[in-house]
Length: 324
Image 1 (tube, one colour):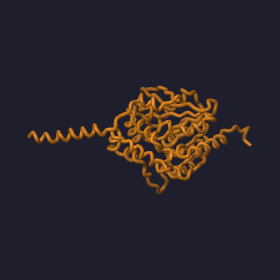
Image 2 (cartoon, helix red, strand yellow):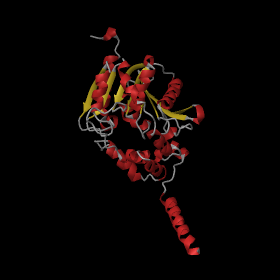
Image 3 (tube, helix red, strand yellow):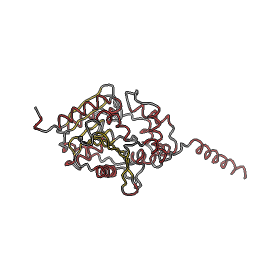
Image 4 (cartoon, one colour):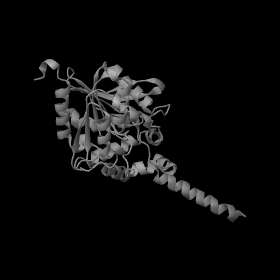
């Protein structure tokens, strides 16, 4: 009888020990803030203890551009554009709830409404009420949804490999990177909440892009460490289950603001054909496709991305009196 109970107890102890040994620990939020905030970093507090990390950089008298990052990223993804466009534009970037130094939302609301509330906090803090809004991937989805909800605030729209459009006829779902594949099932979501080895984050990042030259050890460390801030891993699973309300894709034609669509032709997260769908549905859109670029053009091709954005905004925001 004793052996009958002893063996299961030993197995349970071995499993518990292996779990404790292999489990990827959380990072310390204070240490992460010391490492990944800078002199431009500010924080604005909202309801339920929400504390949004943002940066207000560039020319304070320039046209404001507000930029929203994609899933599992942070405001750091926009720094290449800040360096290239900050001499002429005021550039406001923020880290969305469930990501980076902003951390999780206590109410676990990562819907459009929850993300828009964080954006509104930053807009109120910076005193901006009319601006250019841009976003990559998930941030692009939030951007065009926000333009639908608040057209009076949007001077122009920048959509970089933005999500939210349906697949075109005959298309299959994109292959997705390792992290998204794991988040697609309950076991994978549970696994990622406890086991997130650095190599897995690196693999996911490299599978997301086509140009890999900009990826270095410091960047991989940043993704890995910020992902492990308490609550962020759980938030990643929550976001995967959010209702993206696909019906709103039928309404993008209501957006009249001038819109620039920038897409990497090799994007395997949101196919380049989505740019065609946006263009067909939006009355004032224009498209630029980058050969050999994947899902993150502002980091894979920052010079070209900055130049195209600058030329577009110079053209569409120029007062009529200055038009030749």
